[in-house]
Amino acid sequence: MPFTLHLRSCLPSARRCVILQKKLSIRNTSSMAGGPRPASVVVLPNSLAAAFERFCQANLGPLPLLGRSQPEKWMLPAPGTVPDSRMGCPFRKYEFGACTGSLASLEEYSEQLKDVVFLLDCSFSLEGALEKVGLPRRDPAGHGHIGAYKTTVPCATHAGFCCPLVVMGRPVPKDELGRLVGASCSLGGERGQPVHIGDPELLGIKELSKPDYGDAVVCQPGDVPVFWPSQLTSLEAVSSCKASLAFASTPGCTVMTDLKDTKAPDSLLGPERIPEVHCVSQDPLHYSVASAPAVQKVRELEAVISIDPGSRGIGHLLCKDELLRASLSLSHARSVLITTGFPTHFSHEPPEETDGPPGAIALAAFLQALEKEVSMIVDQRALNLHRKLVEDAVEQGVLKTEIPMLTYQGGSVEAAQAFLCKDGNPKSPRFDHLVAIERAGRAADGGYYNARKVNIKHLVDPIDDLFLAAKKIPGISSTGVGDGGNELGMGKVKEAVKRHIRNGDVIACDVEADFAVIAGVSNWGGYALACALYILNSCEVHGRYLRKAVGPSRAPGDQSWTQALPSVTKEEKMLRILVQHKVRSRVSGVVGMEVDGLPFHDTHAAMIQKLLDVT
Image (tube, rainbow, N blue to C red):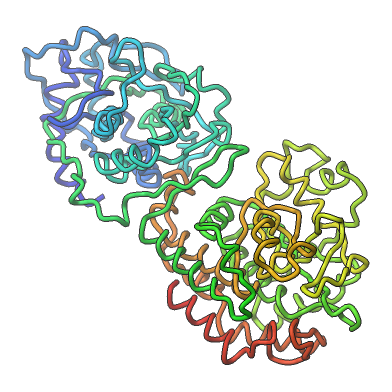
């Protein structure tokens, strides 16, 4: 930490004033802003000091280390200070991991204080942020300690320190989310950034009404729970190390150090540090965040791919920020199932087209780089073709490792649920995001139509059923990528397809995805999703939110991510692989270096370069 030496030099006077006194200068600082810097205290044996310091450095969100003393470097207290009479005993005593009592003073343990004292920064005031945006406190007494909860999110472990993240939570009116998050960040800097917005169960919190520490605040209609990392994680850490004797501040109590509060004013926080908040799921309710510059770049990608080279009227299908929300949702996913395949050339073998597989494989390559589980599901009759495409893509360096290939023949709603969930249990989905890229979509009459209204149902397996089933399974989101309205997932814009796309009243897909990414060529949508994931995961604000402010951050522009991005060279190789397997272009039916009748070098290579330039 860059300030460690300076802070350590200030620690003796801080302890002299507050730690060993019979009458301590202790306050409930959950609503304090400004003035001397408040801190919570952890006292550990010298043998554990180095490990705890590294543990804090590995988990800076909940454990912002203000400083530490050196062994034997303590001083006697100054007399005459007055405690806050509203508070109980300000310190907890721990023996072998168990809390064995509360203490009004540490004076009788002065010998143990020759070990190491740590101070954790508690200067971020959530109440200050609430006040800044005009939101009232809701605790009846008006000065309670904000409820804090143990989560199932593990902190990064070090030596004997291994504990869950503790978060403080506050329900916030939906319409005030953006303003409150902005205010908390402007007041608290990085410490003011939330680590979760939405359903508490995604953190392993079962009941908001039963906090592990502090006072509960009841959610009102229209509220969204928001959670910030809490320094009370230190109590779990002290317990986990099982030291023979240790001390820590009681929840809601801090010592006031003579280190001045240096809160970051708005002027010191550029837009790259203020999160934008976007909803990515309704069931379970889940919001994600990213910086304004990252969001703007993703919007630029969306604009780039929305050109309409075939003049089919796709501009009427566009919905703002679908690419952004789809990529944010994918960024949170652990296991992704991708499908592609549009057998429009029904009189040829194979009947597939060159639009779809390249975009699907480009997205899969980047998801692999993000260390997510990726599988692909295709028609049974096209399984061997897609296996060969993937094998060749790996051999030529387009894809790092092979993708498991799956098929689905359908049969019932139960069959779809059994496919998507472990042991058919909707509480244990195998995948948390489904993506369809240029995949034939079922129309309202049950048929599957190409752009010329030819029904190709006999060539298409009912993979649509999986997207329909996913709508009823909490925790599975879906994205459809299309360029004409007859692709799987485009049910979200079917009314616009019927009005504005030729033959739309017949060919419009009736099956809806959560996010509908519209592109001039569907491959472009796959490339844009990969690029958007690169932008988001290179964004420090989004990366911190993903890892819940615990563990090490990954360097922006990670080399493995850069290598996994689509490129002109890789996509040219991928198209040549398709040509070798006699896959045809949709419009012309040509077996050659073109997609949707557009030449690779004049059109598609230029599009890929534009996307990379933005990224």
